[in-house]
Amino acid sequence: MAFKKKNTTEKKYQWKPEEMPEELVSADHVRKKMEGSDDFKERIIEAEGRTLYLFFLSSMVDDARLEERIIKPLSLSAGNLIEKQAQTQEVQRTSILSDALKGILTGYCFAMEHDSSEGVLLSAASSLSREISDPANEHIIQGSHEGFIENIGKNLLLIRKRIENPNLKVKYITIGKATNTASALIYIENLTSGKLITEITKRLASISMDSIQSPGFIQDCIEDHPFSPFPQILNTERPDRAAAHLMEGRAVLITDGSPSVMIMPVTFFAFFQSPEDYNNRWYLGSFFRFLRLISFILSLILPAFYVAVVSYHHEIVPIELVYTLQASLNFVPVPPVIEAMFMQLALELLREAAVRLPQPIAQTIGIVGGLVIGTAVVEAGLVSNVMIIVVALTAIASFVIPSIEMSNTLRFIGFPLMLLASIFGFIGIVFGLLLLVIHLAQLKSFGVPYFSPFAPLRLKELKDTFIRVPVWLMKKRPKDSMAASLTKQGSSRGWKRNESDDTY
Image 1: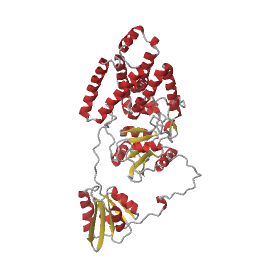
Image 2: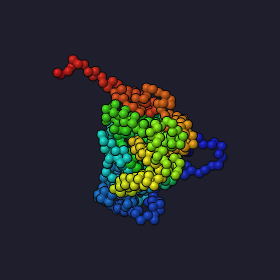
Image 3: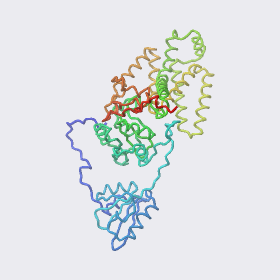
Image 4: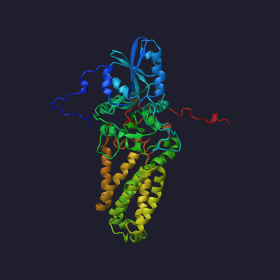
């Protein structure tokens, strides 16, 4: 969390590499830095009385592109400027050694003349990215079936295709001292708050890691509350979802090598929204969102509720159901909390096994494993029939939530609630939920209240939370987006239908 205020009383001076002057490039320096790597290649071209050195990595460049667009034109032409001879789209002249090395490591060919102190980076990178496909973790029925991939350039293309606006800005940032992971911060200049962009840039610049292998590394370093179980940055694989949040005034961070992007700032209710909500009638979208919220509550408290009822509160259960519970629990040798935790852990084991195994086998393990284990533990008298029903409903409810991060958080929080229910009954559940709400009210995402619009209470901004009103009524952007302009639209139903205009 290096972006927090540092102690100004520190007296010891620490040398920083960036304080030294940049080293100028030369052919000998490039060879020395890259020696020992078998895929580092050097080509020498002699034409019209001059000598050109070409440095590149054979594992990173496209051989045909290198030969046809760089080597052949440089060999035949008698011009003096390399950038005018080479037939490449991206050309950059540099005299800094670190820039030349970075270009070579990212798939460029570095060309320079003999005894020169500067050279030219020529694009020759080989494309290894997969084709754009349906996002694996956010599949929908109605709507776009395009998903982000591991290529930062194509991901930018997917966003720009949806927002054809010159105010859409991209700021490239390199993170990781050793890996030099390319990232892109995207925002709309006249919508996104300048204060937000400054804060995000400051936090990203404070990351002092050698290796950045995934967005999770960055997320841990820049979120406000790293010890909270709740995610404060929204990850998505859907370009339409990222574009929608950009139009609300938020910022998006893309990391090369990852098919998911990070959206910030966000609130708790953003994790229950799906792009499909806007492709259905507004009352259906509201119904589905309300169903997800009910599923969240059900998955959170149902096992704890079962433990509390069986342990302390038989009186709230109808007498017929009491006899059923008693009959199913007669031969169970363990307390209800152990029974519930055992089945929840068994469910987590099945879920993890299904994720790690190949897809055809995973489906078989999920279905057969659940049936076999469920039947076996009941017949062995280890758990009750009712407990099997409770665990099944809990699992189904957790699958309804569209965000994997929030679903994982929900599964984790259920265990301490079960423990509280086993000790204090309903009072323990209420106490646990109260602590949970207090924690949510205290959280912030880049300075934005996480539990907005309930804490602080803004009734006018409930239009797009756990309900969805018609889009033509959403005339203002939510304040939690920190947008520079809150006005979203005018009167989108300005035609004001007049019955006298009917054609029949």
